[in-house]
Length: 242
Image (tube, rainbow, N blue to C red):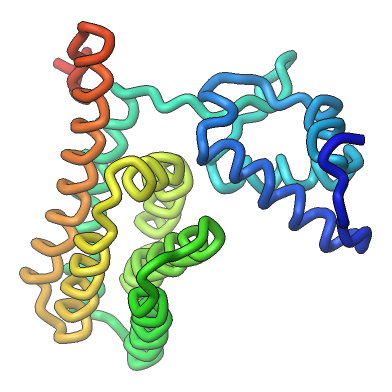
């Protein structure tokens, strides 16, 4: 089979290998949004059996990079611009609200967890060049900031709603990281959010959280505008809203 190379045949290793390779194909644009991911074709291309590939696709669905559609199977997630704009608007409001609430209610455990996350992020920042796997780990670690903050609000519906939003927006986070590449701003924004929450400054925390999401929204609009120049169209994120 193609691409077999020297692959560790341990089941857990095969699953991780399948996940890493298919994720890399998606993030590098080797397969495009809406394109089907057929297990047989992936098996031939990557030299892996269909069982670890199926498990990898399930995991990628959880991360929001693929969708499992009836009668079509797995496809690369399509970023619908109108929906993306609406989701980012909603996240902006809820993240700001969660940050303000967490600043008032955060526990010592929550503060310690945020401190540990920031130390982990500092280790990534110390490296000038990061691999795709390193970037993926930094993205996941950065998202832990938001997950901890919303958890510390103690509000179950807010926690469930924001965690669902984070899942829906995961592909857009990768667009921001790989296409816009302003990770230095993301790091600075994370530091400000954590500093404000742990200082128990609700207004500052809400402002920092809102600016963080607004900047991501602006970055996505830049991607859309760049594509518009190529295709002679203009599609604002708020298109279709009244």
